[in-house]
Length: 240
Image (tube, helix red, strand yellow):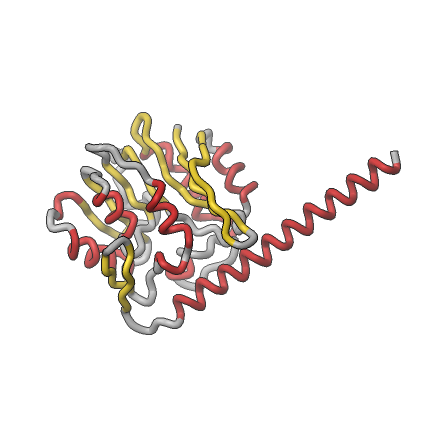
């Protein structure tokens, strides 16, 4: 009996150690991301998938995080698909799905500078403006309830830390308020057989991620994962 008790204590201590290490790594990664972004004081150019994109210094840059490019690689688009790009940032995910054959894309962001940035980048490479629309919205707030989508993309923030401004809101999500609000309304905007593509990481709190999905009666499947240093990146499809 004493052996079992000691064993349980050792396991609990091991779990606590792993959780602490994960929180430290998450904090370090969040700090690194902000440091990369804050070194820019004016708009700058990046190259992604043969696109030269303009990035405003107050807008999330996809090359500083593994999640953006990993998400792009794993999204599958069928002909006639309509897509919602939530938290579009510079517009890279919207551009990716249009390039893969999406019929139309709605791209939204709470950050007005991101909306401006995404419009400029999309206009540079996609002449037919009937195929996309970009506007400001705090998650689904400015979308009519009648809207529904085959695919919804959200490269959501997963560092459980407070955000001081709209740029940091794309990286930090204190108490996962943004994630919880998104999953609460997601089912209302998915078409029948629709799917959401969402990346997450062991740098975030996976238990909260899974609990939130299950609380909202959402099904999920991990479709891809890769390891970077001591943590893992996952891509999930989420559906009704």
